[in-house]
Image 1 (tube, helix red, strand yellow):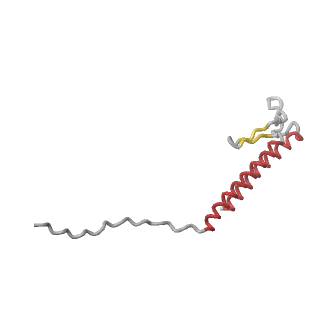
Image 2 (image 1 turned 90 degrees about the horizontal axis):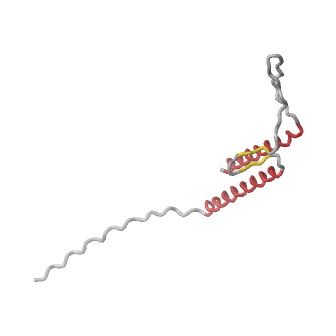
Image 3 (image 1 turned 45 degrees about the vertical axis):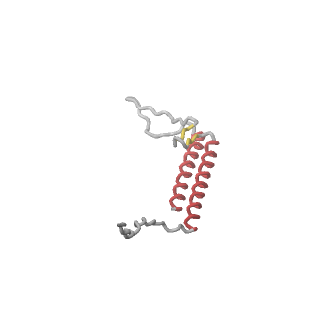
Length: 123
């Protein structure tokens, strides 16, 4: 005698694929514009730092994030002894030589402050 055919078993359930919703074009474009904006900001900062470095008063190295004075900033000497004590004030030996260096340090600070504010405003 022949065996009776087996009833067909139900097909195994297929795993459901969950797809993320498509990104809207504005979100994609916004991502590109943010990247472009960041690159433009980086280029602007690099260009302004190069201009300060060209003054030869200080050198800023973006890799180490250090500014190094290229000229000496000398202070007037003060005397402190048992027979005489000078007033504890600080004065530059040559105020005219110190001023451009300090202007460049201030400009460097302002470059980074402005970039940080711009970056914060864009977020």
